[in-house]
Image (cartoon, rainbow, N blue to C red; front, top):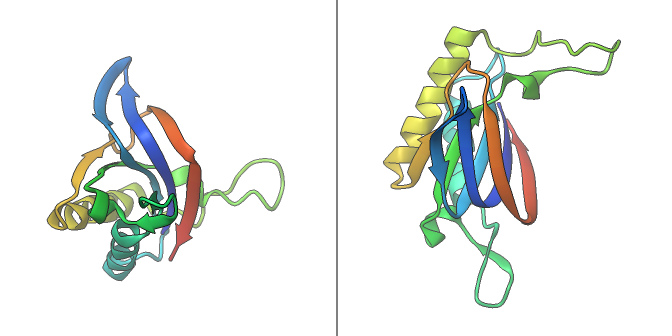
Length: 145
């Protein structure tokens, strides 16, 4: 499982020229699910993300988590994060989970985050989306299980 984490001032998802979800200050997560991922990967990644101290404290240091600032979270499924570009000129997606499994773990990821009390919005699984964001910093991290 791969998560690209971006600290944002705001972010939104557009499908068919319509904004389907948007958040204010918090994180945008682009989430890729691998074929070997399990619920344990979801548990590890969700715990890490909600407690990751990437928001500034009163001294300007990255010392506060999403939970502490009561920030919003926008989660967007992105299988292309599993694209292997090492050979040839076309990415290989053999490591990506099949859609049914990917959607199951994506939904579990969202459910676990919501149970923590974080305000969560999502993209539309499997849809062509436009993801808009204003990156705060910019601050971007990649977590992988």
